[in-house]
Length: 228
Image (tube, one colour):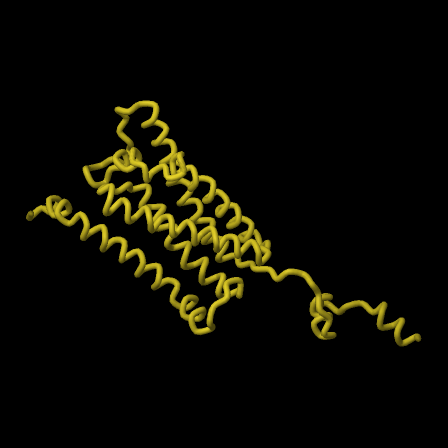
């Protein structure tokens, strides 16, 4: 009995917490797994802020255009780089209100989560899964908007293109993070490839978009060349 009392009242040595002791004793707990990384938080903060600023400016420009139809948005530069042309299309208000409002709300959430992670806090796995679902849905929406801008509207919105780039980068980094942490199930080989090649995947994806833009409007780009 004395031996049991000593064991139950002994103090943990420095550097060893109760979780470590429980692991050594083989005891199991129902606490949900958590995911946290300051570097990923910094990345979410930076990209979230970029996306938020672009979406916010677009929202302001859209309201200005609604109040004054003769208003020329600051991002209307030429016949191709023309926010005004894009803003007045059906695609620019898919849900009945300007698309940038969605961006303002979503990027604000991502920026906040970035601050939380950067502070050293940790996110529950279900939050990471939620971020993954949201970023994936947002990227799918962006892909659709890219196709509409290139092949239906026939014009580009510079601020929208900032959002395109941000979402593409966020998709690959968030997916790599989810795979790395086991929040997104996938074969080990695929998970390892995405995690190791996240930066090249971002570069290739952006290069594809640039190439599509270049080819689609090549006739106009040629007129801007000094030797054309």
